[in-house]
Length: 139
Ligand code: NI
Image (cartoon, rainbow, N blue to C red; front, side, top):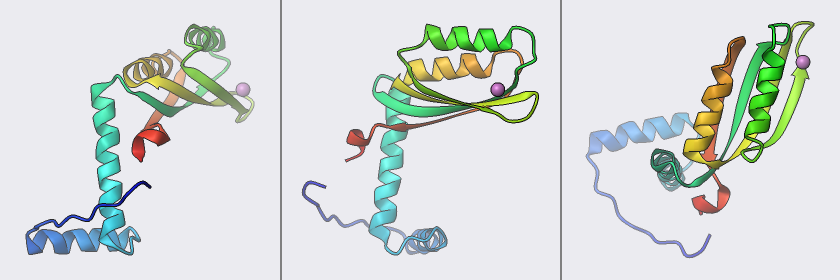
């Protein structure tokens, strides 16, 4: 961390008491760390809303590989977006179902669109997309 600045915050007592209870429950030992995390979270959200910054994320898909053409469709989509998909992990969950975890990197808007298309492919039973900003953007 380069240079740390201290600053004072004026807060309503009741609001501060609620905040202290929440952060204690989450295991924070001091307010500074909790406030830093809140600020980082808000910066990440802001980057997503703007949509043009480089972000990284993971997409988890669960599907039945016996659904006609599904595996081909998912592979085609991934090849069409090979620049955004950094890595793919495939696990054969049981005789019918597959789990795929993809690591994506690129502009937020593009990643969201790739994730939505993969999750929306007919036959995909479940999909979750989780994103974060790149480390250097978080300080
Ligand atoms: Ni499989």
